[in-house]
Image 1 (cartoon, rainbow, N blue to C red):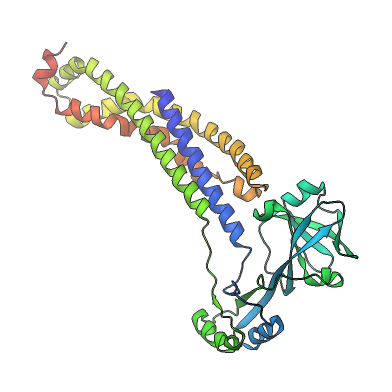
Image 2 (image 1 turned 180 degrees about the vertical axis):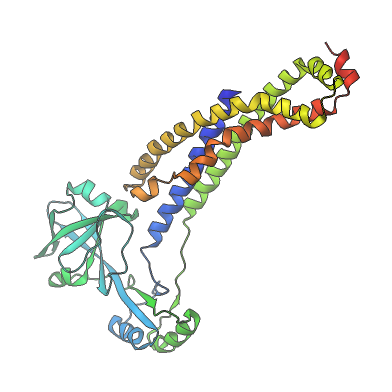
Length: 353
C-alpha cells in the first residue's frame, strides 16, 4: 500500500509540475508577439513606412514597432542564420530570457539557445554577420526562449544590420502596438483599419496562441496522472478490504459494545492514513526530483534551454497540498471498505471467523 501511494504521489507531483512548466514555456513563447493589437500574416508585400505612419497617426497608439526576418551568414558557421530585426521602440518587447538581458540598441543581439550551442559562443562574445561581401560585428547580450529553426535564430535592432543591406522577407513583417491606458481596443482597431485599408492589411486583437503540442502534452500528462492516482487508490482499496475482512469479527465485538457507524469508519480510515501520509511525504521529493531531470531533457530535445522561472514551479503553497496527497489517496481508497464495515450487521460480524 505504501508503494502504491508513493507512486501515485510521485505521479501527481511530476504531472502537476510538468503542466505548470509547459504552460510557463508557452506563455514565454507568446512574448514573441507582445502588445494589444497586431498586424501580421501578410499575403502580399506592403509599404512598411506607410503602415508605420498610419499607426503613428492614431491617438490611441502608445508604443509600437515592426519586425521582419532575413537570412544572414555568420562568420565561422556553415549555412545561414535567421535574423529577426526590430524597427521602432522595442524596449517593451522583450522575449522570455534564459540568460542575460534583452538588447538595448544597435550592436547588441540576443540569440536562441541553438545558436550558441552550434557556434560555441556565449553571452559577451562578438559575432560577425555576413551578407555577400558586407559584414557587421555585433555582441551577444542575452539568450532567449525560442524553438524555431532548431534555435538558429538571433534578434536585434534593424540599424545593427543596415550596412549589410539584407533582403527582408516581405511577407514576414509584423506590426505590434501597445495602446495608451484607457483606450478601448475594439474602437482603436476599427479606427486604424480605416487607415490601413488602402494598403491591403488590417489590424486584429493580439491573442495568445496555445500550441497544439502543449495541449497534447497537457492532456497526456493529465491522463497519466489520473491513471497513477487510480492505481494508487486501488492499491489502498485492495489492502484495506483484506485488512477489514480479517478484522470483521473484532469490529463486530466493538459494535456490540456500542461503537457507532461513524466510529467504525474512522477506525478503518485511520488504519491506512498514517501509511498514506508517510508515503506522500516520501513521494513528493522524488516527484520534484524527476521533474528536475525530465524538464531539461525535454528542452534539449526541442533545441532550447529552459528558463529557470519555468523549471522552478514548486513553491510552498503547492508543495504543502502535495505532501498531504498521500493522506488523501489513502483516505479515498479506504472509503469503500469502511462503508462495507459500517453496513455489516453486528450479528453477521460476530459469526464471521
